[in-house]
Length: 174
Image (cartoon, rainbow, N blue to C red; front, top):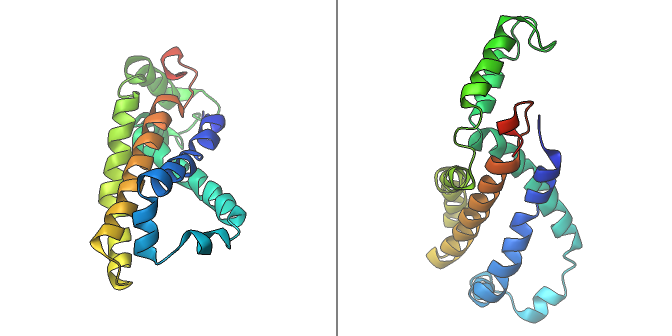
């Protein structure tokens, strides 16, 4: 059902976007807001941060899977019904019928990007903003970080929606 290869690849998106976002695009402004210098950043070993960020990227991708692919909700509702796990019974037949008729609906990059963006705006933006306000960070700092997550989750959501779930149905194979 899950296309784990896509989840592992999509987990790289925040690292790739971060390389550009906190590099040539907003790197100097972000360093100024953080009080960093290029010299102080060179002193840090970043490998641990990259590895942990990648693992957390996998968790974010797993969160976005049911957020962007609505058909997973139908599977979730029916999965504990008698015979479903064995691919028999009324619930499984209903699921196959549903997937035949609606399995390909809303499975586009654009739709996933919308839900990724909504997740960033309605979940991450408030969390990041509250934390930054209590840390005494500036609006510029908040905008740089929230913007990064909006772009990252939009791209992650788009890729996951389009390619993150494989079902037995031909229209679900991406």
